[in-house]
Image (cartoon, rainbow, N blue to C red):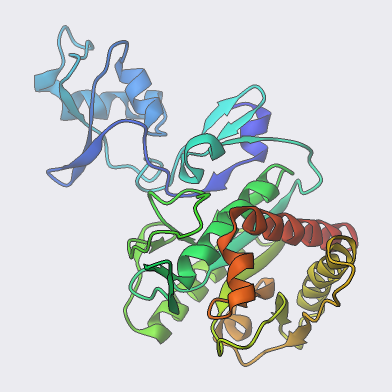
Length: 339
């Protein structure tokens, strides 16, 4: 892996480019023209030297002449901690890295700079799995807040990666990359890192996320680490809100992070909406479970009220979602450079 790939490493469940499905509790892949054992293993993010012998043993009846794969035949993939279903993979290029979870044209991430090198960010989008959050109707289609929080989170992850950060996306969806639709299709197949099923019970869902983040935080002890939680608020239809931020009252670093993003939004509003005052705030909300129980310094962000018409326009427009992610990332950078 080249240096760009190492600096941009992101721990996601990334799904392979070929058809992959369960067989006898192991994943399988169909050999294509040009595939050999080494290339098959690399596609799944496995070290081919380490897993060559195990692959041959699993597939000895389907391999010809000791190592030749047959095009169109299915082959079992060793069950390993660093296999694609368990940990993920990336495709490193000279000019950047591809992360399939971002989807299609968004999968490629160029390293623009290294201003966030040696940092670790945990990104959590609110709700997910059996809990879609607040649901609304848009032109006859049901939309849910978790889909929009997730889309902004993915966009934020790309921004942070492009500046050299290491990023963990805690809630993720195997097939919903960054989407440029206004009405984002509702599904409930999200999981929690690395591939945990999301519980139905609300408290258990929150505990699961806290445990995952705290375990990762301890693994990266000594590094600069921050957590960003993104939600879409749900209030009365008449209440139009600006983006606002929460932090823990005893966290000096969390307050600085929230304040840095907040001040960035103030500047952006003065520039792009000079005739309107920005009313978003950053305040202590130490009673929120995620704010109270996670170890990294954190900012908890509400990006709008899904029930309000004006806020809907902010959330539904993909360009606005990109702007939200961009502005948050600029606030994150401001926080890091002012540490």
